[in-house]
Image 1: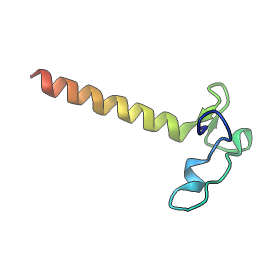
Image 2: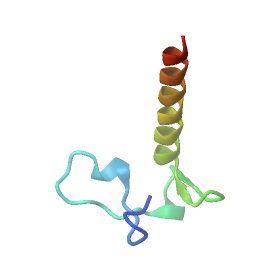
Image 3: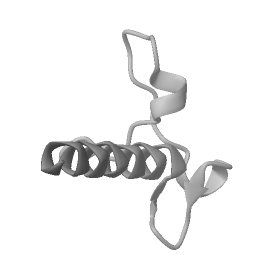
Length: 61
């Protein structure tokens, strides 16, 4: 959720805009407090891992 360890940026509010919006963290419904990150980032990371696993399985065939 951070850009180089500085100010956290909200991926939902910032999408399609020229100016990034600051993350509301604990005040946001998408914020996972025990991970200290945004659920959108977690879903994107998991999707990337799935794609890489599928590509690896396909190339092994």
